[in-house]
Amino acid sequence: MPISSSGHLILLPGLTGMEDQGQVIDVAVHVGTLFAVILYFRTDVAAAAVGTLRLARGRVDTPGARLAWLLILATIPVILFGLVLKLTGLDDQLRSVAVIGWTMLIFGLVLYWADQKGPEVKESTDWTLRDALIMGLWQAVALIPGTSRSGITITAARRLGYKREDGAKLAMLMSIPTIAASGVLLGAEVAATANAQAAKDAAIAALFAFVSALLALSLMMRLLKSVSFTPYVIYRVILGCFLLWWAYA
Image 1 (cartoon, one colour):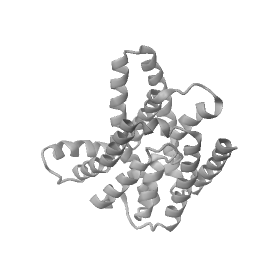
Image 2 (cartoon, rainbow, N blue to C red; image 1 turned 30 degrees about the vertical axis):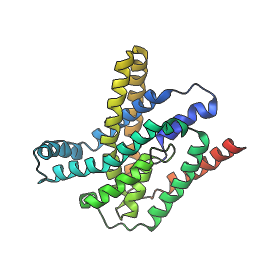
Image 3 (tube, helix red, strand yellow; image 1 turned 45 degrees about the vertical axis):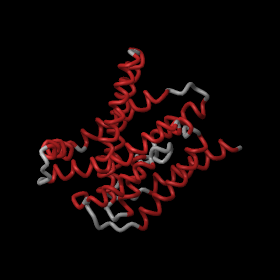
């Protein structure tokens, strides 16, 4: 859902005083959501997987190959921005209640603006190279905690004129290569430290995240057939205001 899962993961220790679970658990729960997205959109994922093989041979002559190509292009900005944050150490500095409060509030209002003003004239099959790159740039902003990766890409999609369901679908598909890359880093970290307990905790977190993400995704896609993103915006605004009060009071 477009309410920032990573932001909520940071808030748990930030508001309760509990020990921070660390980025290993953060990435693990995102891997759980990755499998939920793959299962829910299995038809599109299968087409993109087959298309990737054609793409490897330099052929973009099928809808699946075209989808795979656009997903790759849309992922490049977030990878580059992620490397900058990692190398500069800004990724740790941004994990604060104040930052999440501002991003939760500001990007919640931006989502409302885009959802209300954006026309509904495009479907997911209309995805173009230009739109993929624009959505990819917006997705990179989601590395700032509280922004919400799905929320910011849905915002971009609605601004570009995609229907609500189609914008959400593209946002979910864009999460696959992004989260997969993070999952690879997680696996490397666990393997390098040889920490069996960390691996066990990560697996449990991923399992619960898979179940909850599948339920949340199914609910959201059904709701979008009859309602807008306003309920999510209301939640973000209320939470954002509370967090800013908590941070500065």
